[in-house]
Length: 85
Image (cartoon, rainbow, N blue to C red; front, side, top):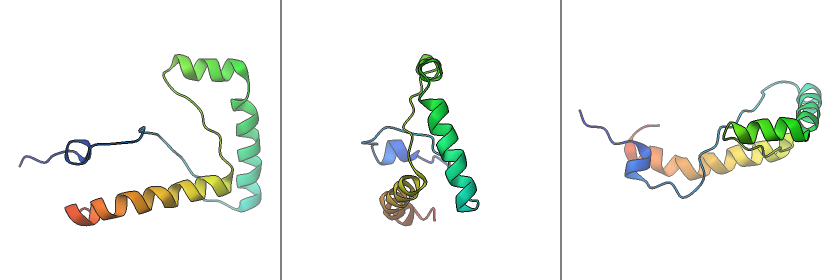
């Protein structure tokens, strides 16, 4: 069976990103988010990430939730069209 990848079927018009969301109690999410933002603001950490071909885009828990919802809205029609849902 010759199955095309999503990028061959639907040209990607945005940057591929890895994203992670902790699904845990809000106070803990806020603490981890704040600590991670502090670590990522360190020039040495940021330089190391850039050296690995990565970049950071710190987001608040609310921004991450909005981002995930946007990704779901974007990909849902594609998944439905391909029967991959």
